[in-house]
Length: 236
Image (cartoon, rainbow, N blue to C red):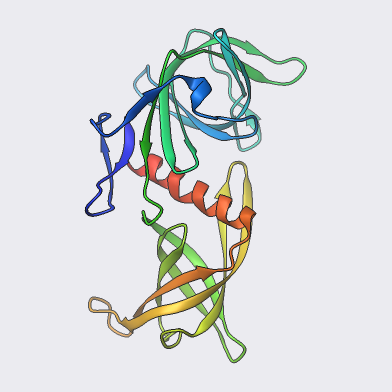
């Protein structure tokens, strides 16, 4: 199952691989060492998801990934366990089924996963947005106020605030925290106000849309990972 994007609406939806999806050998996907992927268990009453990093691959034998951890504690996954691997490469969501061939602790905890014959992929639009609840601080040279990010994309965000953030074209700085991998990431990003109007549903509140500007490469990667992982979490 993949989080797919409807070409007309841009909304994230879950569905079986559609006719517009692609199937390709893993070697063509460019999943590189250090890339983050999500492991989802497929057996048992509860499906669990863990984020791990790719170590490497030895075709056609196995794919090596770091062993999952939760709150700094190692999670043991039995050999033979069926898993769904999901991740993002560029603007493509990728997924394939696998099983744990070997779980090793030395010289560090890692897993050997069976090498897939093929990987499913689906192109995701850069404009895709995901709903979030993130506290943010918005500032200009003349003021600083608290706001709440209610949806997020790789290029901007929609915020809810008790005060107007500015007029169209005004420059602001937004600071907020996201969780990436096993660490908190603090982002400080320049943005332009694109719209800021009274909220039709919440009295005394404003809906404000902003566009991120001058993103650094690392900031863009963090945002892409956050948006795409939220898609997977919400639609799995």
